[in-house]
Length: 345
Image 1 (cartoon, rainbow, N blue to C red):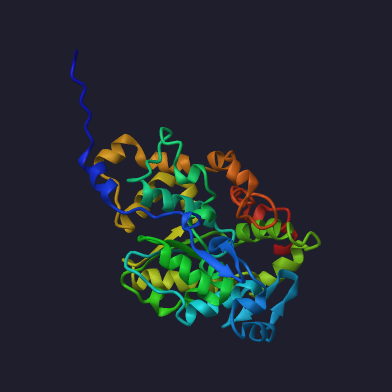
Image 2 (image 1 turned 90 degrees about the vertical axis):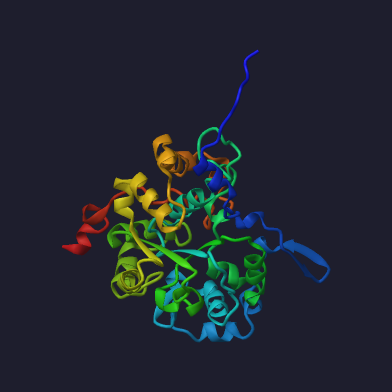
C-alpha cells in the first residue's frame, strides 16, 4: 500500500497562524436589563436612552426631515447615528493595534469592500475557495461581519458598542460613513490603525442612494435628492468634502490610508484585492497568486454569489427589508441616467 503524504505551503502555514477577524455578530456580549437578557449586537433602544443628554442636543441640530438627517459638525448624518458619533468622539472607542477601518460615503461599494476586506484578512483561517462551505461570508451578511461604528455606538450611549468592540479579538475590522474630520485622533492619527476608503462617481452614488431611500420614503422625488446633494445636505454630505478629507489623508499618510475607486475595482477586482492585501500587511504569496487565491476572494464576494445566499435574501441586517448587497451597486449610471439628464442640461 502506497504511503500518502500531504504538504502545506509555507505561505499557507504562516497565514494560518495569523489571527483572523471574527464576525462581530458571532461575539456574544449579554446585556442585562431589568432581569431580561439580550445579545448586545442586536440591542437597540430609543434615542433618549442611547446617549445621556444626546436627545435634546440632537433635536437642536439643523435637520433635513425628508432624509432623517441632522447637521453635525458641518456634515449631514443619520439622526439616529449622531449619538454614536458623539460617543466615539468622547472616547467610547478604545483603539487597539491592528485595527482596520473601512470608510466610505453611502452607496459607494461599502458592502462589497466589507466582504473583500474580511475575506482577504481571514483567508488563512477561512480559505475563500469553493471547497470551504463553512466560510463566514457563506452564512453571514457582510454587515454582520463588519459593523458600522456609529450604529453600534449609538446603542446604549456607547456602552454596548464598547462592550462589543472590546470583546472582538484582534484584528478588528469595522466600518464608518463619517467624514475624516469627524474621526477621533484614536483613529485618524493612530499609526497602529489603518483606513481603507472607497469612493464612487457621485452621479452613480446619487442614483443608487435615491433607489435605496425610496425603500423608506417612497414619495421622495429624485429632484429633491439631487437638489439636497448639490447643496451638500444629503447623507454624508457635503460629498466632495467627504472624498477630499480621505484623499488628503491618503496623500499625507499613504502607509495608513488607502484610497480606492469603485470604478477601478470593477475594472480590475483581482489587482485591487492584491493591493488591498498588501496594504493590510497580508500580501498574497507567489504560491497564492499562482493558485488563484485572489480570484477566489473575488468570486466569493461577487454580487452573483452573494445575492444567492439565503442570509442576504433575508437581509438580516438590511434596513428597508431587502438585501443591501445589490441595491443599485452594480449599475454604472453616470450622466446618461434618465434621472440625471434633465437636471444636468
